[in-house]
Length: 174
Image (cartoon, rainbow, N blue to C red; front, side):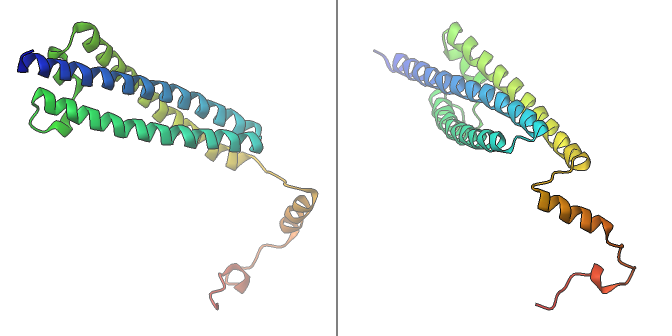
């Protein structure tokens, strides 16, 4: 086997490993998108126990995604080195496609496009969640117990403090 053939085999092996990592990242993005939808729905229903469950799942998915992204960065840099990119940290899948069998090159390209699309969707979903959260706090009153409800009613019946009244200032004496 010649050096060129060994190099091409190494490039193909690294590209195959990268495609497996990207497939896992794609799957994690899909799972995360669904969990974010579930979180939004759970928040609207004010199901706090289920919300905690979904938030824990979201955290686990994010940790797994971070791990996969670290692996992606390592393998991408190795692939960049193998194909001779001057700054291997700047590797892009397009840089490797000419060295790969067409099916593998197409798979990598499709995975990258899918992940980019999912990332945009996740950003939109995150923004929607923020907007829903702000709207919910503006329009929903939550009473934890009859005692809490009574406290809120008592507070609402108290007269508003007069401007300059000491009761509307923060006590900084401690």
